[in-house]
Length: 339
Image (cartoon, rainbow, N blue to C red):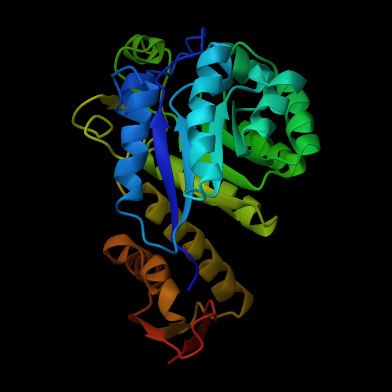
């Protein structure tokens, strides 16, 4: 079993970003409303370190805004504080998220100096019209320039994208994913667009100018994107916003495809598509009963949340019974036999 990976999150809400993307309310999204200081940052780090196992792989992550856009001296203060823990051997790396247009040779050099090992770019889309309508304030060309600088520096590249933005559609979101593959990031995050309180997108929604994806649409599209990234050996480290006290369907999310187990739904949908393709390839639709054999770690995704995949297959293809059986070779994904 590998080491437990812990990222200590340091939220700097909406600092360094003069843009108001129409979907963004960082104080709500991050759950962080107080000003971050170096002192509070150290308190956060120490609290997390006290709970970490001795063999944990620990990183500090700066999130919640465009880190490289804040005042340079404040950047250095935060980076120096984080770098101290790196030099003491208490953490293994530092990561941050920022905008593509807040990356230049000087910035990248500074981040290298303080042992930043991962930069996640908030790309959201690589379609010019979607970027414009969403009020991103940068172009796709800015993304390509930033990616080149990061890759040349040797810092690990991460890409964050969104689906269902105004002006987008399934084809544009899939095209963005294919372009992201060409950028060769190590990691990707996929976020369905949510309508959050006190954003311009909320006004658009209430005025009937924006229709968000529903959960079913978002799950289906994210499953296609996950398949693209999986086939290109790009690790998808998050799908959907993490639930917080604010980010849930009862408080600050006005509309959109929020679900507390969104990633599980997406992964189950991808397995369902693969099972359907298998049934078609081996002409098993005529069987009355089928048995799906799989390794233990895949059982939950194959069955689906609340047995959703099993019930779907029964209803669509008329199977009387579908059994899912665990096999000894835990790495075998699945195979199907008629019973």
